[in-house]
Image 1 (cartoon, one colour):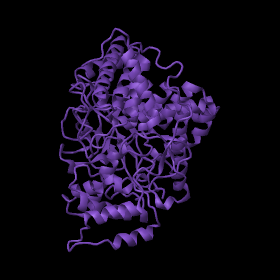
Image 2 (cartoon, helix red, strand yellow):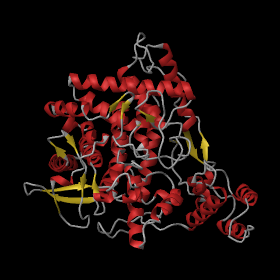
Image 3 (cartoon, rainbow, N blue to C red):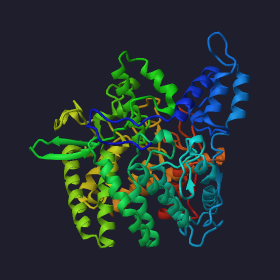
Image 4 (cartoon, helix red, strand yellow):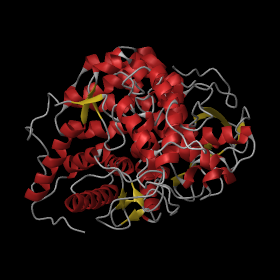
Length: 563
């Protein structure tokens, strides 16, 4: 059920729902009406359930359930039906003991000298065993009974409700796996993501049928670059390059491209998030429909659904960053935003493709992508850079259906987000010492630096990608960008943030026994909250970033680890 990308900015093809998905959404609605008062109700659970019998038999049994006059199903009847006709959510994934896991790998975190921190790091290392999976043979044999998509290799899940491989999570999982010397497991993840490109034309948000309408931040090339740097695996690079070129075409198709005419009369091509979907997200349709009830027309609802799905494509689901009138959720307008970070990721992708093309002898593509990356750098400086704030700012489109958007300074989003500093992660920016000095000055006065790391935004909206939450990917990108600049002041700030982040992860782990998806950076030693689901544990990218930070900065024996 691959999506097509043949439409214009304002008229996109929509990925069709499968009969299985449609039915599971009906089941989800029934379960919500029957069990929804429970505080732990999660609609995603119901679209993850594998069927024990054919869809037609399951639908017949569902139709025959006893119902009251208002159509509701008795609780016990629904529970008996679920038990008889479905496996558990996640049962179509099998635990796998990673073949490259050893309890204490040779060369593991040599700079970590503190015994308590080292013991904790080894516990995080052992979590890869808890999170590694393989797809059940039943998925390949009977794909019509599963929303889980078949994949050719083992995978690492984030944890908790996230029972499948996710796109951008995988970059930081891989960084952690490389610190753990688990090169085989890291390469297997990339193999899976390449297979999704070969099947669908892009890397899906996650390996589920209901994610075939959108991608996530494009970091596959960065994953391959890190693995190659660690292993020298030239075969992986050769195998990956055709898929990366195909993924690049997806991100530069009409649905994602935006043309901006700058103040000097120069034309620039940049990109935005734009999911191929104008319906409630199947995994969250209860919430989406409730929010969309504020709109009266079908077209308004469709646009809202598209903007919500596009925010999910961004990875920032959800944030005031995408709202025209924050914190009003119904003013979500993601497709009207040209995001700083997406274009930074695509700049990195262009540079990585150029590098891979060069090392494999494809000089034509090497030269072409270097030229393309230079154009993007200029576009980012022209459209996003704000010399007064010394930050890159997202750009709002006044009318997203125009062929060419005339740049206006008033359309830059003046609010402070951690994403405003993500370009620093890319070599064309971190290698500019003068620029880095200005950005460090801005970062220090931005208000984002808190007791336990970088805040995501300065707005406490109740959304999870807002204040006071801090997220592992943002800590890592900003810290690594500062570090790679080579500037003494930047390195000092990078190390300070890394220490704060490691500390809060450690304290929370000692209090709760688990790693968390996000943390409260306002208060050291507290995990994060907010958003449309309960806080999750596991947790892939949190583990990966802590291990990457410990590998880089270490932890001396005489340094305390306390808030």
